[in-house]
Length: 106
Image (cartoon, rainbow, N blue to C red; front, side):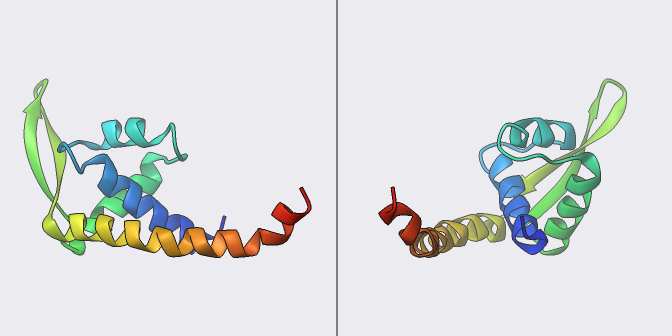
């Protein structure tokens, strides 16, 4: 998969993982893994980038004697998810165009 396309998709996946509930790194990975492979070394730069873009905020909570970082989606993050839904319609139309010959031959 094209690296830039995958990067954009992973950003949206991370936002979707925290859309309904604040979450932390390990749980985000666990929630996304059934759909797309993601590692800690991939996730944390995404989280930092999304925070710098003000699409999420970070806060810490003590858990088992340690501080755990939780991530919360902001309105900008929700707006990005909504924009992705609209973009997906265009991507789907492009896919139909690209595969139209394959569909005719089946």
